[in-house]
Figure 1: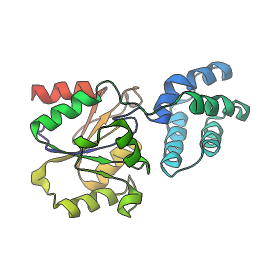
Figure 2 (figure 1 turned 45 degrees about the vertical axis):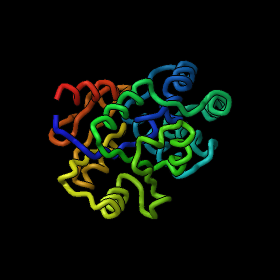
Figure 3 (figure 1 turned 60 degrees about the vertical axis):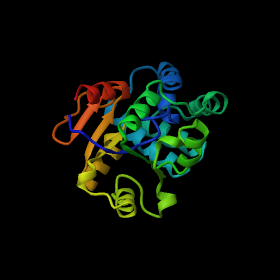
Figure 4 (figure 1 turned 30 degrees about the horizontal axis):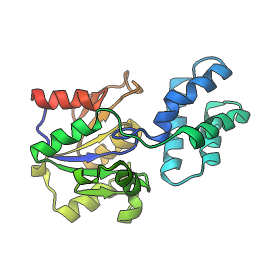
Length: 224
């Protein structure tokens, strides 16, 4: 694979277990079991994406649950299941392969940036103790630009750091809808970390690559 040197990495569900990623494992199975039957994948992806956008914009728990449950056609009286579990059980946490991946990139002398729509990214990075790995943590609110999938964050970073194609930048995220479209708008290569096989049937070619974990990506980088 190409020898990238500058990494624009998403935070939620890429480096750390974001709320919706956590819910996919710890909440949604219970709701699906109560409702009966698996949700339509296209409908689920659309609802998931819209809810993720609202979360990044700072929407409260009631709004997030309302949006997702309405999109999925789930009974609204089950919203409390999701909200209660969030309040009682969810805590930001790194995926088990995150530190090894960051250590590998740092050991090569690569430049690493967080590029996230989550307005709380600065706080989460500090709380998780991983700030030392990144040259900067960029969010739309901090940079005064529109978020992904527009090119605003890349335009801001490129101007600030005088980055060019020689810096071999690449975008790493978890969502084709935001990170994939972001890479197209920026004209950059994109690596999707698809931990839950949401995009197993999607077509990946040209500047797009798919891995099921950061460990798999690290292995590919080490193999050259």
